Amino acid sequence: MSWFREGIIANPSAFVLSLPGLGKSTLIRKMLMGGVAQGHIPIIAGDIKGEYVGFTQQVGGQVITIGHGEGKINPLDVGALGRVIPLLESSKEHLEKTGNGDLIERAKEQVHGRQVTMVATLVGLGRGAPIADWEAMLVSVTLRELSADSRFSWEHPPILTDLIEILEEGSTNLRKKARARTDEAWQERIDDLVLSLNALLDGATGQIFAGQTTDPIQVDSTAVCIDVSAVDRGDSSMKAAVMMACWSSAFGAIEASHMLADAGLGDQKYFSVTLDEMWQVLSSAPDMVGQVDSLTRLNRTSATALHMITHTFKDLESLPTEEDRKKAMGFIERAGMVVCGGLPNSELDILSSRLEFSPAEASMITSWSKGAHLRRSRTFGARSSPPGRGRFMIKPSKDGSAGVPVQVVLTPTEITDRLHDTNQRFDTYFSDGES
Image 1 (tube, rainbow, N blue to C red):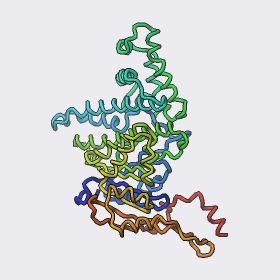
Image 2: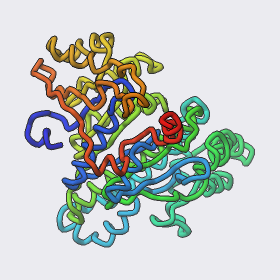
Image 3: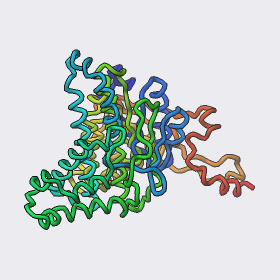
Image 4: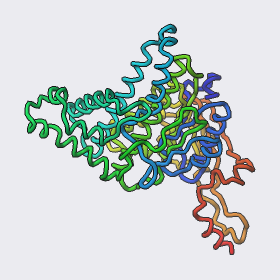
């Protein structure tokens, strides 16, 4: 964000490439810490490995845990955007005076659109095929009926069982929209949809989507981490569903903050979104590449910095469709800066088609990909580290300008609190080797 403000880069985004174990996540956490010090709000919308939980707790942020036996997500939750609507309504007179009278209706429609999209996406992921257009229409009409029901409010939104109940009853308006002239025709029309919705309550995703959201995002948090490390990594459809729900919540919170600023009811806030283990994020859902693609084009207009982190180009080349692969390659071209850690020659050859490296830069980056020297810690003391750990080359320009080589240095506090130590589960094993 600082480099963007100074005009060094044209877009507040970074694409980070490096082999595993060389400190990519550590680099980003330190960047996020600096952002928090400036009042920016980092959002990690789906921390797959739980690597940002400690950082978020250190800065007094909000950690939301999602998974079997952990927290739940209500697909019909109105999110942070819905929860600011009462505040907007209480300031209706002020909004009209300042020419922002349409903000309330705009917020309501955005919430409704997010609810429909969320349900349609989850049903589509469960089926492995897109939801029918008329089924999405029935979901939309049903949600409008629920919004008019006095049992629900912005603080207490409906849940999936309420949606299913209204569909089962089938109001006159719903049946008219569905062109169902008899009870039998109506039941036939909704059978597949209701079955798919029931599967969300207790199917591959367990009961993650059954009930109210356990821990809604707080827009005034110093940082937000949605920890999904408890989600079964082997279940791709479940992971995709949870990731999509996390993203919807995160961007709803950003929109809510901007809407309050537009209404003069809050300060303009600046955010950063981090996509670590990006290869898992992009492959988690059919439309995820498109979602990230739109973010890389619009992050400036939403006052949001973007960090995209992956291991190698092969991660992007392994995406299922040619269209997805082309979009993913575009992320690098649009990134304000590209940050390279240790990479092998094969990766640098591919990257050179998009960035210009001097021979000295290329030699430096490939030297960082070498493994640690073969030596025993019991003989030489501390365990040996790869030569490239913590070393990165920042390329802020695509025109061949010189890169900036940097060394990540941990402060005593970071070392003492083990903020960046991802090997803690090996403590006993390592100590056994030293005894």
